[in-house]
Length: 197
Image (tube, rainbow, N blue to C red; front, side, top):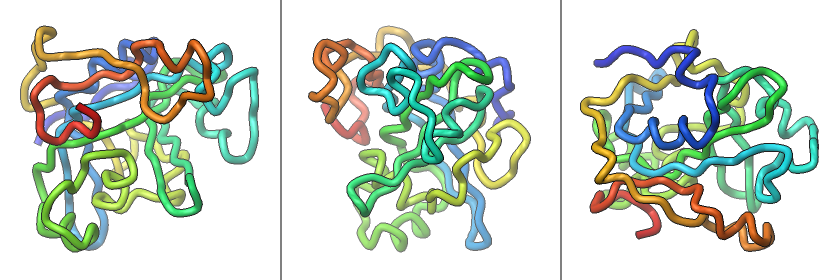
């Protein structure tokens, strides 16, 4: 087990956090056991000016309150009436920027992930699958990744070399115009768990 990431890791621009989360380990603890996976795909959301961000234009609703919190907070939202997606809040309190966790390479608790997903493959290849496999839902919205024990991020088993990190447009944000074409998705090249290759 690695060391938890510090508050200062998260209190940075979301593009830096999105890139540097690659290779780190997301850990979820429940009464059923500990599960974890190495983060292999992320997306940065740049807050108020970003037409794809939930806080675009300064929107602040009950749903997005956690995105306005201090770096290291969890922002979980429910989408399409059936899926949860988990984000890591970046920056500082009042700057509503975040990083969507898109995919993990499963590490610990794989049988438990398989039971939760009802299948043995593609356990964490996509934000909704990741949340189902790790039992992440709205009850974790607002959780603290630094001081909490239910969900947190540990330093990676190894740094991901910059040559292995690719950038691409974000997924499913075509409505955001030019912002949809910005290269704000980061992923580990060649990893089979990446959701959009």
